[in-house]
Length: 382
Image 1: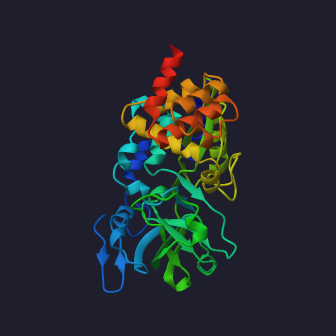
Image 2 (image 1 turned 30 degrees about the horizontal axis):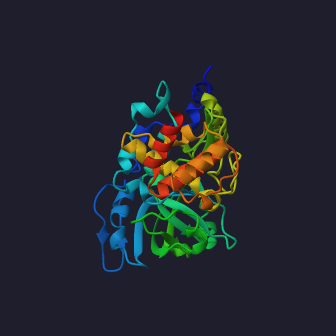
């Protein structure tokens, strides 16, 4: 019996799916509100900028000065914020979110389950959201989206005065005029740095800056994690995500079950290194947040990126190197590191072979010596 297939059949009500066709419609208008949001170019007046859609906003950020006044109408507040705000709208991101047959692990009816590397590719295309607890001062970092898609939305920093005055919550429908500001350091450190994407957010500190309609609508969110898992004798890392609608009261329990089943499926014996909801985790995680993972084990994220680059080029050199090195004894791996001129003295060469393989491959990539390392492995195998 296939674990995830049985799980997904029971999750129709909570919409925890990976129907990637939904992502292609991420910038469609809000169809359930009185005032429809239409596509089009942003409007600039003397004192503010007005944007009609998420994509419209992100296409115009390069011209936004610090402190610009931004008007949004019929936008939805969500407590979830993109893993990399704006990545959804970068060049090539849409292609990375496209389902390809080679990346599908299982399909049951309309439900598609991707292989781990397939999930990583979709996340690299801008899918993936985090939920943070309020700061000590009571500020909340979430998103404003006119497409009801947290991955495609705009970061929104909300003061406790605004939040309480309007009784805001997940899915609150609002309009307003906010200020475009740098993310405070306590928040900006939580996100990776990506060229071309500013670490900015919309800020509302006064209740008068926001008008709430007193109604809430569903938002599509994509909780994600970094998973470490076994494949034969090797260790690999990939992103895992699920898609859910916030209107469902069973969303959290369904997502928790999904992640638990996925880490065990196909004999992976995986463990999650990060939690999607930092304040209220839905699954067991080694590190409290992606920020902590980046500091403690940067190798995991670098190798995901390297393997994704291989996939985009139709290659498997990085994963092949990891798998092959994992077959050797630690003493052999230390010799390989020296022979490949990887400055072995700077690599932690203690531990089991599966761990050493990851460090050696990462060092080879950093120094541009992966082809040489692969030749050494092949010569040894002969």
